[in-house]
Amino acid sequence: MEVVLQNLTKKFPSRDRKKKEDVIAVNDFTFEIPDGKLIGLLGPSGCGKSTTLNLISGLLKPTSGKIFFGEDDVTDLPPENRGIGLVFQNYALYPHLTVKQNILFPLQNLKGKDKLSKDEMLKKAYEAAKLVQIEELMDRKPGELSGGQQQRVAIARALVKMPRVLLLDEPLSNLDARLRLQTREEIRRIQRETKITTIFVTHDQEEAMSISDMIVVMKDGVVQQIGKPQEVYDSPTNLFVAKFLGTPPINVFNGQVKENKLYIGEDAVLTIKGVANQEVYVGIRPEGFILKEDGAFQCELSSVEVMGRDISVVSTNKASLNVTVRAIIGTENKVNMENTSVKFSLVPRKVFLFNRETEERIDFEVE
Image: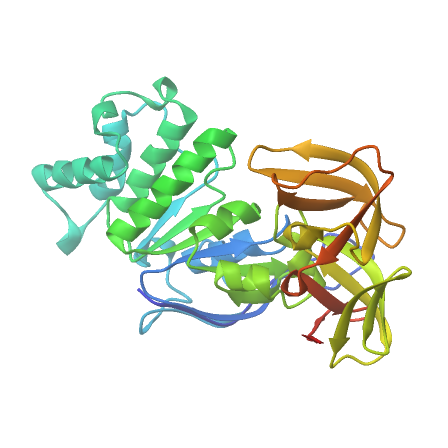
């Protein structure tokens, strides 16, 4: 099911008596979500991602704009008539009901031509349970399940009606790290098997990038960038997106372009063209450093962290906006800890320039 958002805006009355302007939670959001894709809505707390999900579900009514499911305008349709499945952060299971009864519950409320027989309902419930691999838990109650199992029950309950659109609001937040990894892989598997259009809300960029076909990065109710995860990571549209995506985060420096040279502090780190002389922000991904004795970029060495597959070189630089500069290099490199400084050359495609005022990315070419 294709989902189309047209100029979607949601305003809330201000609670501040001195400021009477409305709070804009979602601001003029336009996007076409392709049929059968998993889309990640990504951003910090308060960016408007959960509000967007609640607008799509019908739990909130937009101040302006339209929502379409396929050809159907569902903007004013109540949630129960939209054909959605909704999974919350807190699972919202009925504690006095068994797993089977929890999954059956949405089917038991169907009326008219959609009403099913008991056998049909049981068949669908077991199909949904099998899909999330909890069929052996059907007679247990939620209190007898682990957090990951409860989350699977919540997903099965949302899927049992085979919704047109599946909406997941921070579904993994309450799980430990290992279980989060396992459950997000399961969500991706289930989505691919069912081919249900799925919208996944999270503040965890690694989570969104790992399972989404496309991500939507939001800030203060405004969409910053939409694209495939790797494309957004490799070509951030502005400094906010560059800083939000990536673990460890991008290193940011005060820099200057002067006579086709990019300077960080006193160091001319790259020869570039296509950029006028100006002060800039320079973003360098941790994997954008190459350890080199005669490298153009020098930092003060702090420590070296061995991470098994990689080595993290932690250093400082007066031009850095981060407390430390973190470079990720291969284990074949040897860092002499007796040295007080470390030198790097840079991988040009891992270096980004941003306008000092607008923070928009500046394109450049390397000579």
